[in-house]
Amino acid sequence: MVIGVFGCGYVGLTTAVSLANFGYKVMCCDTDVNKIELLNQYKSPIYEKNWILF
Image 1 (cartoon, one colour):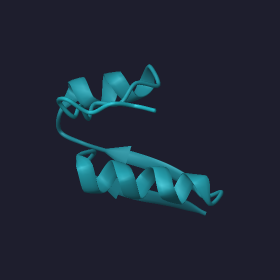
Image 2 (tube, rainbow, N blue to C red; image 1 turned 30 degrees about the vertical axis):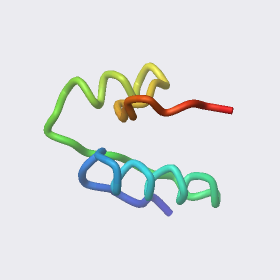
Image 3 (cartoon, one colour; image 1 turned 60 degrees about the horizontal axis):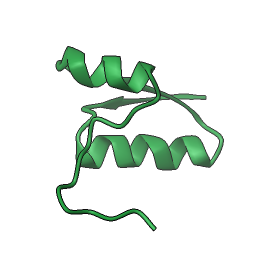
């Protein structure tokens, strides 16, 4: 089953990653070309200022 997610912002990308983690094939769609390019490079388009990764 392929699930389409429209919008790669905070909600859409989190939903897509969660569904992919459960084993679904997920296709993301967004009007922002930069977000799609970053995702194709396995980079997150979401950036939280002053957020520390432990």
